Amino acid sequence: MAELGKKYCVYCLAEVSPLRFRCTECQDIELCPECFSAGAEIGHHRRYHGYQLVDGGRFTLWGPEAEGGWTSREEQLLLDAIEQFGFGNWEDMAAHVGASRTPQEVMEHYVSMYIHGNLGKACIPDTIPNRVTDHTCPSGGPLSPSLTTPLPPLDISVAEQQQLGYMPLRDDYEIEYDQDAETLISGLSVNYDDDDVEIELKRAHVDMYVRKLKERQRRKNIARDYNLVPAFLGKDKKEKEKTAKRKVTKEEKELRLKLRPLYQFMSCKEFDDLFENMHKEKMLRAKIRELQRYRRNGITKMEESAEYEAARHKREKRKENKNTAGSKRGKEDGKDSEFAAIENLPGFELLSDREKVLCSSVNLSPARYVTVKTIIIKDHLQKRQGIPSKSRLPSYLDKVLKKRILNFLTESGWISRDAS
Image (cartoon, rainbow, N blue to C red):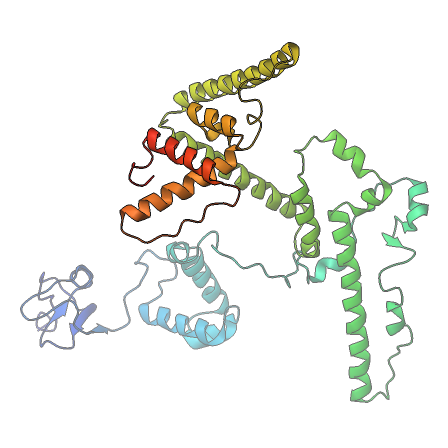
């Protein structure tokens, strides 16, 4: 008869009398926890069917070796209690779980299994990512209550203390921010016959005074963080000379002045890191442009880039020496070169040797010649494509000069003879 009361898994035929999963859609389908977790399917039963946990509440979630021997029903009551009463209300939670558990047992079991156990390690990360900074927390934010904590005294001489009106033992100044803030509470007194309105009014005065104290301390912290006192005394220049830093550009100085209102929300180190990262970004962009220039010139290896830069510097130096030697030779000989009249004009380096001779012979500047050449070639291409075009040559181009340029372009092959 005892054998008739036992239940068996329909998949692996293991005994499942203490705990089994019954399918709500198929008849007589009961699986053991191992087959259910593996997604066993048999006959018309599928793993996505609904299920029902059949249990007398006697098995343990953490195994028989777990301390205390908590059953699954007690674990469920514990989780319901922590959701209903909140963490820390161990007496109410123990009453909800049952009379067999004391508040101390409930606390130890929950902390050891759900926080410090494997479940807690898997669900609670060591470092919470993307944590938002709470500026009202007591850890030093702009609105933190810890702002009223006095800072260590400034390391300045007695003469400098007298100059600033600074009292080092109290970390106060003779003239503080909002000097008359104490008048809000100087005349306050608590009387037994005060009504509710008077009490609330006095509390409001105290709250206003506390806010002013926090703002006063916040300003002191900003002045201490950004070394405003040494800057006022002229000590920061000596410190800057000792610590060699990169040279600050004019644009960066102007940007620092524009961002001064943000100093109160960022520490000095964060602000320096911001500009340091902006400088690194600028250097990286310049390096990227340099590498792109190498790629355009067919250079794909850094070893080749060194040779390219060396050759480029040699070319520039040779060109500079050539120009210097040519100018010296012209001064010594007292004679002008063939293109002396136009070689210093803009656009001279764009001309070929024949074009230089033409511009020099007709006394035409290189820039004007390039403009006329562009207009003539553009009109010629439009006529070849059948597009009507009206030539708009500059006013300084007379008929003789136009004819010479047209003949030159025709001989050079820029335009056809019928166009000229």
